[in-house]
Length: 73
Image (cartoon, rainbow, N blue to C red; front, side, top):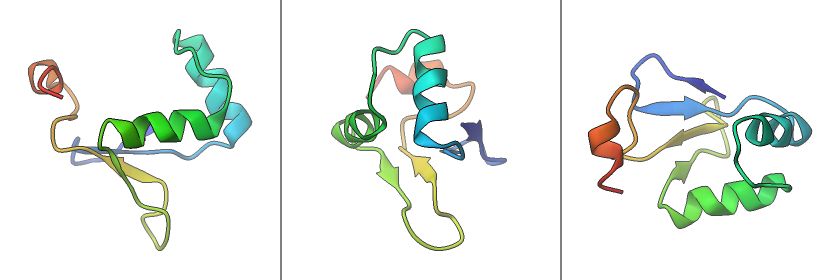
């Protein structure tokens, strides 16, 4: 996972197995990649699943270095 240059979205690049290892490392209680994606959807994140921006994820209230905005989700 890495932030995009605009700081308003992030990119999921790893395999499902790599993602679960990363989430567990950072104390997220996820054991399945699809559960993680559903949780993003539950918080109204938008995922791009086709085209050149495939893997891009964004939410208007989730931006790099803006914790106060994140708290409004």
